[in-house]
Length: 193
Figure (spheres, rainbow, N blue to C red):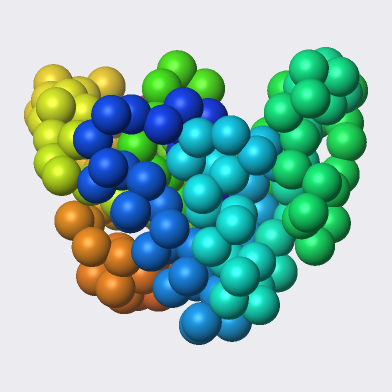
């Protein structure tokens, strides 16, 4: 993996563990020579991630809608800042520019990006690993919900392994490196669906 899309919050929660994790991810990816594609913001976990990677000499590509540039939240210190018109273009560019996806803690926008990455993998629009960094067990309820969707049958057994999760970045990257794409829905027959 030469470049990863990293999804995370534009807010900074009161618990310093979240910002510390974003910083460690930025530093760690840069030290491994893995570039970052992210939301292009200078605030919250996004800004912390980008600043840490840049400090360590890493490549950071920000992808941000014009409306957020106008709101003055863009990080103009990125290696490259790509300005798009819509959120749909932003997410498509994340997919085009990256070899996989890592989700750190975040809010609604972060969840939108994570679920779209999983959905697109199920459908076959990409065959890239989708990782979830479970900082301070933040995502325990989401992981349980994902398992429930598998158990109930809303996620097919063939797709149960799309979401890769771990509590630390080394284990997460190891799991993502081992990922083998599953049979996408688009190539399944009606009897398999």
